[in-house]
Image (tube, rainbow, N blue to C red; front, side, top):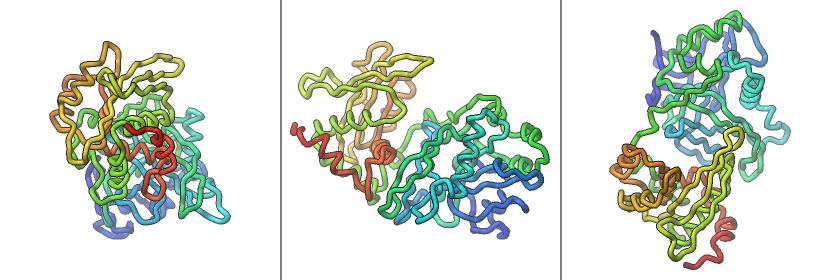
Length: 383
């Protein structure tokens, strides 16, 4: 085995494949691939069998440190093995979203998936850049959804693709497999070799990463950095009254896409130990409804949610019900450990989760919650 990428490991990115110590472009690129040194979406072409619509593999790069004026807000969530990634369109006087080369590659890949040609679908490797000169490998991914939506670039509304990627359940990738794919002379050869999870994928079985599902997150992993824009967003929620925060959480969940549900806030008095309730509906062909109870607690940033707080909600759950606990702060390790080890049907939402959901729902503008939306849902709430 030659060079490999391991999930969570960092690698040197000198910005050029000719540099002897480079572990990014120098490892990935091979002569004749047509890969360019650019941010975002990079596709490597076949070197022997030319194709205008099938890349050998695709490299995606996100910046962990948000740059001034950067309209992209990518999300990497190892707990759900999910990555949300923007296409490479930006505001342009003449070009449309599908004129950008990276978006063309994403659309080509999506067409192959819709046509069921999984053996031709290019593997996607996702990296993030924690700082200049360094990339971190986040895993081997497959495209599971591609939607066309709007985002803002320098004050201008722009159409762009929003990708949903599933991280496959393998902790490392052999660079030799990628080079083999690029040098194939016939498409039938693409079925040879590769990780087991990739071979399962081309047969129609997606095995998502699950080694993180029972991880216990630190305080830093549950809250945005102290002086960031994300921390300011969270601080704004702290200005709400407890009752206003409950209303905010209910309205936030009502806006969630791809989830069929009904949700109701309980009365401020005698709430029975929970703040909202409802049903999630799994659509056809499963067609199954799951009742849930939820609790929303607005805690200060440095005030952790303890086991006793969560236990109150757990005690109210009946057989077959699901619990949702939402806070502006974080959960102690002991609280998380008990939920995981005891197998409680409970989802814990931290401050970071709230910020990510707000961003995903486009309820953040210029680094702040959209005040007109927030005012509209809380204006008549005084308790």
